[in-house]
Image (cartoon, rainbow, N blue to C red; front, side):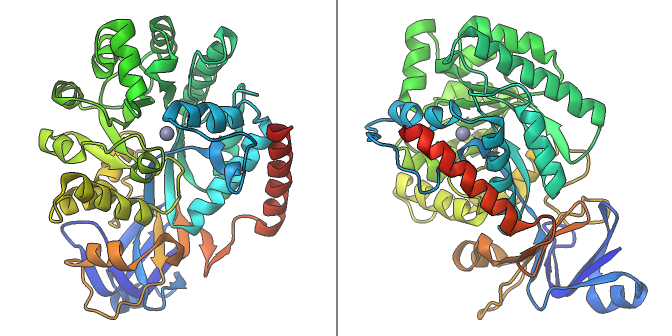
Length: 443
Ligand SMILES: [Zn+2]
């Protein structure tokens, strides 16, 4: 048992939201009790003590959309790469990288992403992977890394026609096999979804094959109307809008995640809502790619479950939330909107999304919930309580303040030191792999 105490406990449990001098008691993989520190200390004197030193004890963050495959791109420059639109970004950078990603590259990318997540207090990720150089076994390799280091993950492979039929079929098989594997494991640390890149890179025949291979075992995870090209492609080739095409192909549903949804209209929102399909917003990535602003406020009005991801632009969920707030206000021309929506997305909706895959409640500190707890080294100089904590989060806190990360009752980082891995050694290995990849890309 771990007693994580001597800090401000922010539970995200609306019934008991806050303890000024609180503690969380974990028992194995779950939280046993949350309460006042002095009381719990007296009640459980034998529990191993984790000192929050006056920081904020809170649930670990959930990232509802990210890409492990992009990890080795930091600092990379590719000769001649000067994109003028979203498609050129994909072709010149991301598809170029994943076409050269060997199994070694995939593993290195996974280690890099997982270590970064742990450092930023992210305890669960929904990843969307591509490594067209070497597809078979890639999800299994990532799963081994997330399991080894202790991060909770839900993985999928992005099926696409862009590299020909053989690669497309390999991607389909990888998803199907991985989903079956995770179901047979029945492990709350590792789940699988069926990944599809985006409608403009898959034919109807491919969608059919995906639905057949998935066999109703999981939901789909794909990019929808991220750029205007996705909308135009479907309109031109199929005479309908992307969400209607997904509806007709049986892709929508309560276990499916649609990333982005920028260029969707009101009727498409109605379809998403009626099928209880999930949407994940990635504001920084959208701004960086200059693809537009997702109609998050309208989707909330419609009652759609909208969560927050990063698209691997960052692994700091607070950074993503800050940008989500700014882009919505900027886009609306109103400085008084989106607060409610953005905080709901990060602190509650991501937990609701996770609940569609993971058995134990995530994103909340309460008895029976998963023991995914972080300690933020944040000492406010203005009054702090659960009533204004979101204001502190969005204007005073960042992921790098995370000092201790506990996932599934296991301490992965303590006082900024990773306890789950030999960080220096792994970093050196990643760096070598990255250098090799960069040379290939510029060779
Ligand atoms: Zn993405």
